[in-house]
Picture 1 (cartoon, rainbow, N blue to C red):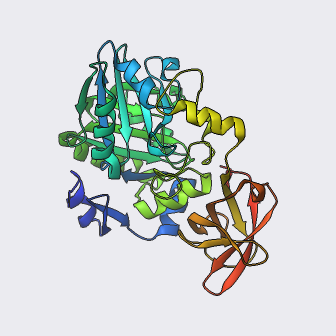
Picture 2 (picture 1 turned 135 degrees about the vertical axis):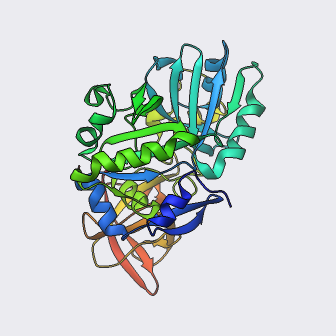
Picture 3 (picture 1 turned 45 degrees about the horizontal axis):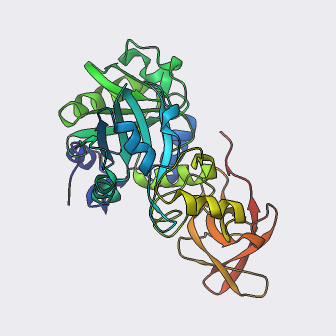
Length: 360
């Protein structure tokens, strides 16, 4: 199992460590609900250094990215980032990712930890344009500083005006005494804040200074369990749960990042799927009674027939209600429709709702 550069720091803080995507990662410190509320109301810090980073460079870098991703990366200017996904040849998704345009012909692709090798091999197999590829995953760390107080709490650590960085924009600037880091207004919580990309040798200094200046703002370390409840309240997809090699971007509600103004892997088949409409859809639901939906639970109709499966589910700390995502046939997918979640022997009624579950 791999460690991040901060593993010893997490252990010293008393984190509960678990295996995640071949990494030894902190799942929680003081408890999921408390950590969740810290991010919603103040500021918390996640070590997400297990994520993968690929640098794609050269005059044909954009051509390669356009081929392997569904979103239109030609719209990116330097300093902008874009959420996208990589389709496979059979209608599913290799991974979802964020594409950053760092320089004129230099792009940073940030991929999921569990898919680093798979994604690298996939992109490499499509690289018939001789774009230069570098896998930086083992050399770089990533901190997510998230919450409504993140900007104010962190401003003293940078000469750049952090409040000027719009959502899905980034700068390369000084931070916490390190001259060049990427400060990106992205995140996976819906509560605002930044993601900080730096070298492994720099991350401990940044971590310590972040907690020093954040102390008066109630800053706390946050584990992966709260990251999951936070992202689910926003309806953000998790690869391996809500999207995978068998789910199309259109089924998953990712039509907004699937641009048919260009050709990309399997684009003709996905275009036909859009024209005919997907046969199933990823829906969001709230339980109408007490209960906690979990990944893998059956979704049934009012006659008890299995019609789908829960892909993500939890007891929402913000709403104190069971919430989840799952795939159902398109005919059942209307907002306001009632479906049933099979929780052990009980079919608990749930209402299909519009995302997000929680409005920040």
